[in-house]
Length: 185
Figure 1 (cartoon, rainbow, N blue to C red):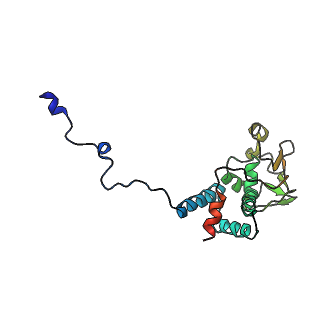
Figure 2: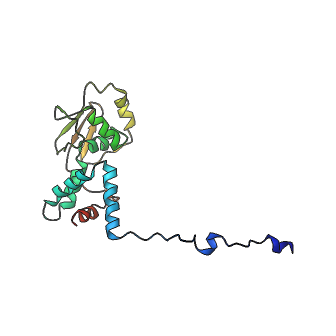
Figure 3: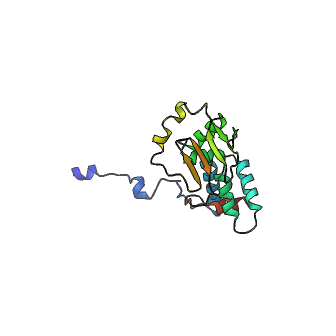
């Protein structure tokens, strides 16, 4: 008799199969998947909708199979991204701030525009007045285990980097085709 009183009179939500009114999440549609990829790229590179749209238009003007490669190159060759890829900042957002504060010289000219496009052969230096700042202290020690991409070199001794080649798309988490298709609608 005691056992009968201790049993549960109500079924829990887990035995019923879920809460009333709750829906199972659906797989996103093709449009939804493309939108998610677009937002992933926007937020990882820290760019606006208009900037991304302009990069897609510029890459789409290239006829043939090079559209995806050109799009990737446009994103990777931004000055703030190159500073991040060289290991001079912990994030793209920090790199963007460092660039806008005027800590870098590109081809012997001070550049404060994070979206400035770098090309193969460009030389990036840390400004002389910025080298002793805490921001760049122990840069060699911080980057001892960091391997920059093959298209960039950085010499910690003279605090100078160079764009050696065009970037190649080796990132696996970015689906650039989905973004190009999103904008082709």
